[in-house]
Length: 306
Image 1 (tube, rainbow, N blue to C red):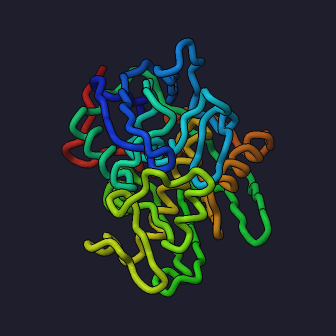
Image 2: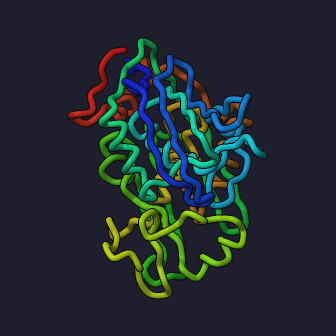
């Protein structure tokens, strides 16, 4: 049986929001089984807790936001991706600002912090969302589909006119180990020519070469270059995993995306949840072995019992 997990102790992370440009401190607390991932804005007296759930998502422009209006938390996707990537289901997040810190633009800092903090196993079985029939959403020439598979697979294709990106595809078979090695370090990216437009829209106020890959018309401007030849599509998979984790369960299904973004991912989640015949919630003990084995942690990350 695969048990639910939380973190072993509370831990605080400080950084800036890539869009707000504001310094923020985020404290992650251990939580009991079935608590899920929940956020609370402690800078807003009496603010309601926001559950990390597909139906709680508000804005999806250049990030995924939980909640609407003042009581909202922006850019949750990288943290959620890492929590899913390490099989952590239950965490209470207190945050004193409007946006999860961007760190280096990838999930690597969160992986490091969680490895150092430790992961605890709770005495209750995980549940899986098993996809039973295909569900698809389309917006213009962009689309995303989820269909039956014995474990989580993400098949992502991106298409940009930039000569260093062009069309990139990667098929990622989920496991905690594969996530750490292949996906967690891939950084967000953007075009230099878009910077002024995005800033006029109130975005990327905290963006820099320290927290994003920036490309001019021909090359990567970051002195250190790329971490992977196909870092761009790997980051898309990081985002997809964070957005799809908002279904609230571990997933057994194949997700295929073409030129997708946060909005499309959320539309796919909502359509799946609305199509009751398309999925089933089952306990880990009744699932095929390979789906459960994907959540085995690499050596050095083995959880303690809590």
